[in-house]
Length: 143
Image (cartoon, rainbow, N blue to C red):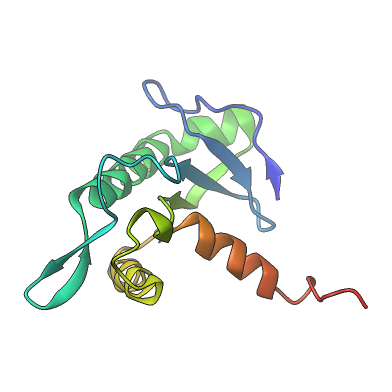
């Protein structure tokens, strides 16, 4: 994927990292500081771990970016050659170490559950992103 030329694709929005996927569609990455969210990533609710309001706010921000891209789809394609019809977003939020009292797997599971219910937006912790990259097929340990 190559980085898109502009971070301000839509008036009033500035995305953190605009990428062009291999299929030509835009993919937006929204970065939240790994260790400085003003609170936890998850909380207990009725016996289960659920993402906190801060995580939902970050997802809402990404969704608003996608709405703006959808509304400006024709202009972006004509002026910049960027396809936004199939645009998606990734939100990187925090690190499990900011909430040491909660098992990392519980945090990941709460975010995976959220991801399964939100279309076009994926939420990951920075650690999960790195772990996924290390497990990727092209990243085998050197002998």
